[in-house]
Length: 295
View 1 (cartoon, rainbow, N blue to C red):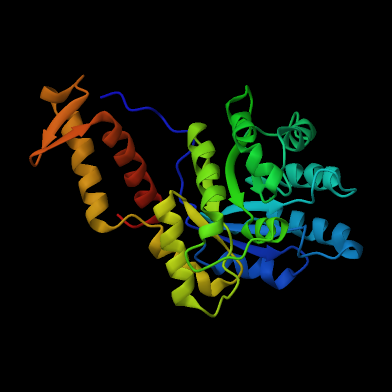
View 2 (cartoon, rainbow, N blue to C red):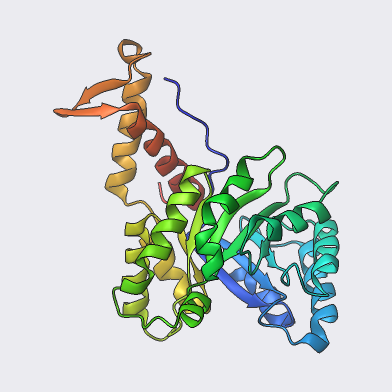
């Protein structure tokens, strides 16, 4: 069986934003069940304390203790006075990825890639897709992942900013956002990039939050960005493959490994025709379940 290797397989069901200026939050992140912690140097930090927050986050990253959690730092936008220093300090500290806000065109991301020249290849770039221009350019932005040495590995959707800039009026079904979300997912999948859905603002409305998580998963999202720890459990549940889904995926992989099925593109299982593309999907399902401890 020859199943295409993916760029990276790890759970990103829940990605919690935490203010980089809050030392208690940086410490609390070590105890939370989020797959990703995003230490924010942008929106959550006032201009007069950005330099102090940068050093505080760098010290936390260097200190470690975050276990299996992916540690991502949202830097300031590439056209701001703080961005280049954010990149230099966080690259030295050794975070897993930098989340770049306000990526509206490939050049916005290319600037940051240039600043990372010489940094460890393990440091990835995530891009916030949160402007109307980003939606129009999303395929070109995603294509940067395929460039030699490209670091782009994930999109984070900024639905709040998109709503503001387009003056859309959202309903429970997120009808005005369907074009944006679908365009982002399609571009991401074309270049093997993960996608995290936008935040749900009312953290006390757990039912509404879980409903929106289910909607995001239906659209193809890999997880959701969060604004409060109470949202972690719901995101982890909704974006985890179910026990039956994992069991079926394991059976598909095992079937393709049988000697009589070697080299086949299609096999028969339980009266169904199963193709190699299903095996590729099954491999990802099993990997996510294993990494998340849900198998």
